[in-house]
Image (tube, rainbow, N blue to C red):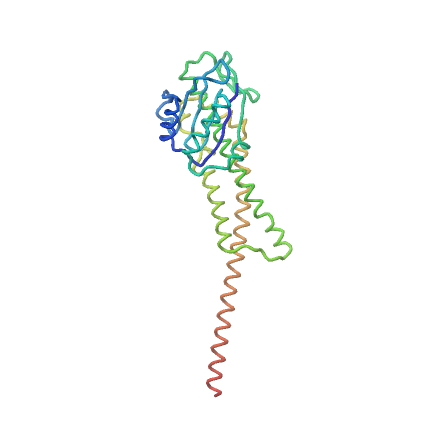
Length: 279
């Protein structure tokens, strides 16, 4: 069976999404604990393969994780989802930066083994949902991070000519407004990664659920979340240094231009005064 995760937008309207999916015949699973906030879980009657009920997790942060769901159903749900997205991503990027893991139901404790999820077949529905949630949470982080990695790579590509131009002594064709805009993009990425997400800390939900925390942490390690965040922050630091250099360079140019304007104005004033005295 397959577990597939997509990050499609910055955020979802979960309330309206729940109502819309219910109008299409999908049933919400309400067995999650109260501290599992900002999550919508939908059950699917006709799963892709026998052996496990189809389940979809929607995270308010803009990611959806599908467990044992048919491609046709997945496509329909994604179409419904489009109406409830805030700042949606490009469709091609969404499908390119997805995560997919195989999973199966086996005896013994649930675990991630060699890139395959193995769920305990003896768990009741509520506990099975919680364990899927732990795996889904890590997958959600991975696909969101993948989208931001793609955004950062695109940003780096847009400024890669600047160091070469500076090295060659050429004029950099960027205005002060464009530099400030690029600095804003970098600060927004930094905010998403370090302040508004769970990349740097384990969510409070797992503090008193050691078995779920272990599943979540091991999946995060398998998906290299910590290492990827570190690499992104190093790239962001380098980009910030470059944009700071550009801002200082443009500020110096503007200051120099103002100084020359003042000199010219003083010169004109002196010439008028000399002319008045002479005549």
